[in-house]
Amino acid sequence: MPAEERIAVFDQDGTLWVEHPMYTQVIYCLDQVPALVEKKPELKNVAPFKTVLSGDREAIAKLPLSELEEVLAATLSGMSVDEFNATAKKWIETAHHPRRKRPYTELTYQPMLEVLKFFRDNGFKTYIVTGGGQDFVRVYAQQIYGIPTEQVVGTAGATKFGYDKDGKPFLTKEPKLLLNDDRAGKPEGIHLMIGRRPHAAFGNSTGDREMLEWTGAGPGTRLKMLLLHDDAAREYAYGPAQGLPDRKVGTFTSALYDEAKKGGWTVISMKNDWRRVFYSRPRHVNLKFAT
Amino acid sequence: MPAEERIAVFDQDGTLWVEHPMYTQVIYCLDQVPALVEKKPELKNVAPFKTVLSGDREAIAKLPLSELEEVLAATLSGMSVDEFNATAKKWIETAHHPRRKRPYTELTYQPMLEVLKFFRDNGFKTYIVTGGGQDFVRVYAQQIYGIPTEQVVGTAGATKFGYDKDGKPFLTKEPKLLLNDDRAGKPEGIHLMIGRRPHAAFGNSTGDREMLEWTGAGPGTRLKMLLLHDDAAREYAYGPAQGLPDRKVGTFTSALYDEAKKGGWTVISMKNDWRRVFYSRPRHVNLKFAT
Image (cartoon, rainbow over all chains, first blue to last red; front, top):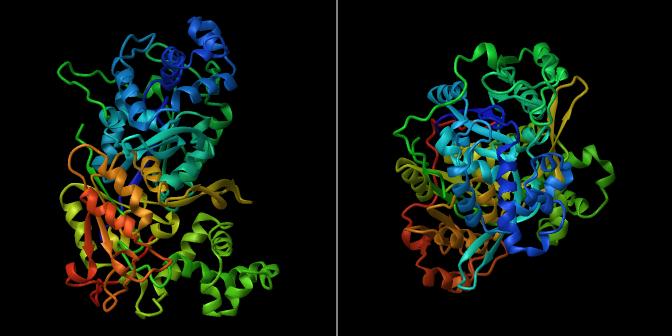
């Protein structure tokens, strides 16, 4: 039998596409609240749904993590897998980044698309290993990254198998967390979903630390790379490593920077190392998303 | 971006290789008990470990499921992922089937190896979807089926990320079940690990029913096949479908047979449809297993 292909893993938010001012999936979830309240009117005057419905951006940005998680759970579960895929597909096809005024699917990083292709051309299997929702990222991963559905590892909830009134089977997304694919959950998720240690790992924040450590602990040569967002002019600048502004999303601490330098990991400076940041879709290309 | 390959899923025990008189993994676990008791002498005189150590085959065969599960949990968790892989690899390279007197790795079904190759040659990605342990099957799947580690979906436990005294990261296998990949757990596991509906599914028992239903419920043409073990002379005969003997392992009920006939699923008769049953390894081929 032929040898197995080697594995290269990529964080998504902040590594393959933009994550500021807020994770794309969180914006998706906030956008689903009006439809949710229409189905469940009892949520209309209840926090945090009331705040989200108000449209008050400052108040929404200040929601505590526990209340934000309540919105995520309510908008990412309770429907069938097919319903979720259809809704997420429709959203991603039309939603635009608030500052860039372009579809999120065009806010992927051109150099990283080239890295993905380079690895695939050299016999690697490319995986996304994201703290974001596995089902959400799977909706567009093939079309924008060339990464098939089954090569997306992410935070995943349980599903429940059942039958509709005609006896047709369906899967319901349950509000039960199976894998929190962030920090230590990333190597755990890699073991669960891939089962082999990667030869290369790319990330950009403290959420990727354990994944890079796990990759680096294997025998032989392993590539570990972190992207530093130090380009306020072309994208965003945040750290707090290297004295960059400290933000809640995509934190790159000085401790992580020190560990990278000590461990021989490569830190990519978006400002100095990238000639071009964003992918620009040729006008004749029409994206088609998975259903 | 290119279109995604289609998915074909295969149960393992009883579909790709022999499962009688007992699941191979259960025999592996029983074989690990002496080493376990050496590490934990307090188990020596405690049920069910005492029974297993006695070597009394009849008594072992009569162990209730709850006690057997205790043996499985104790021998499949509590060690690092690397330790488990090394132990399982060593075992599978040397263990022999009690009746056939051949390595388990040679008790794969020749027609199914041909089916796997046929699907791969025609642009399908082949997956194992097994009620057995994901980590166990992954040790040999590439070598005996040409199915890479990451294309094995099975019953899976949690792992826990940590560091050894030198700061080197490792993963420990925990006694916490994440996915019970049997019956309704099979479509749930397919969603978790693959995320797309298969175009073809192969099984041989009631544990595969929901997987075939889920496969068949997709649009377009879907292939659903069940293998009936009706060949006492060349392998084993068990049902109880079609009046075959009723056994605890790999039950194929009359209800499943009726559902297959009604739903247009194909039932393969091992006795009538297979010219040859077992793969015979050419003498010059040396198997190498994953580590």
